[in-house]
Image 1 (cartoon, rainbow, N blue to C red):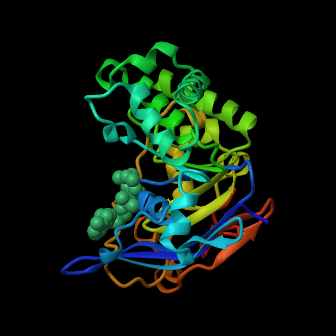
Image 2: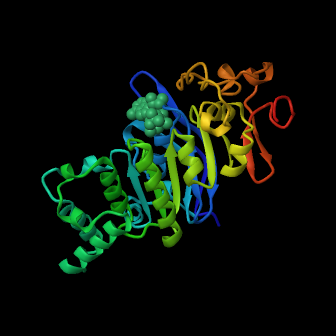
Amino acid sequence: MPIVEVNNLSVTYKTKTKRVNAVNNVSFAIEERDALGIVGESGSGKSTLAMAILRLLPQHITEVSGEIRFNGTDLLKLTDEKLAKLRWKELAVVFQKSMNSLSPLHKIGAQMSDVMRIHERSLSKRDVKSKIISLLIMVNLPERVYDLYPYELSGGMMQRVAIALSLMHNPKLLLLDEATTALDVVTQGQILEEMVELERKLGITRIMITHDMSVVASSCNKVAVMYAGQILETGLVKDVLANPVHPYTQGLLKSIPSFTGEKRNIRGIPGSLPDLSAPLKGCIYAERCEHAEEVCREMKPVDIILQGNRRVACNLAGGGKYVH
Ligand SMILES: Nc1ncnc2c1ncn2[C@@H]1O[C@H](COP(=O)(O)OP(=O)(O)OP(=O)(O)O)[C@@H](O)[C@H]1O
Ligand SMILES: [Mg+2]
């Protein structure tokens, strides 16, 4: 059984003037110990999807439909009480600005202890401290961080503390939303490497949300390419990167020179995301797609299944018109 199975998930933001379809009929499944990278440009709905999985979207302004199964249980149907038990214990999250939630007035160790005590009331003070120090060491931080204030840490150290916090209760699923985006390339690379190692040791499954395909390439085994609220292509990283089928995935990869090794200018994808509040006819990417034909503007593509359990939502895929 997949650890996470999302079926036909849609999220609409209801504003005073319009309805924004931020996530539109998204489905995917991941197995235990998978690391799935969800990649797409700004505004494509990645964070909305993450917040929906964690059920952290503000209820009064959102409409959510579909299923989010975690070990078989539909999170959308759980009572708040049952959900609160799952969150942190089984599902943990790290945001880009996770550390902003820490108070500048208290030392790291004291704040981590407070979080730990919420779920583990029976532990003695000494046990809490030794558990926290071992967490700090686990994420490659020196012990002395326990006695430092947040302002005394670098950005990389802060994100390591955020990761340590997320690992506090041995979660089964870790969700990271642009958690390494603000870091320099070297520190990001180190943290990603350490994460992969840690996951192997602890048996954690990860969903990694990023706009950066190189983050997916270096730390995930599966990828879902998201565009304007939809998943356009999904499969194993090694298949998708070696042979992207959807024109959008091809465009994303062409905008990273190191992936092709060719000496040429980095090419962006002309155009911008469509208006997510307008009714949709045809393929959501048709307007920006250099291969679009009449059918693309008229017909919404159905997912085509390719070898290796790859799925591609493109009217022209499989027909050999531009692929390969
Ligand atoms: N509270 C809100 N009310 C209305 N629309 C919203 C709200 N929050 C997000 N949106 C819209 O939903 C869409 C998806 O936003 P989301 O933040 O999920 O994108 P994202 O892929 O995470 O982008 P980024 O890479 O910039 O973080 C965007 O069009 C955004 O404007
Ligand atoms: Mg986001």
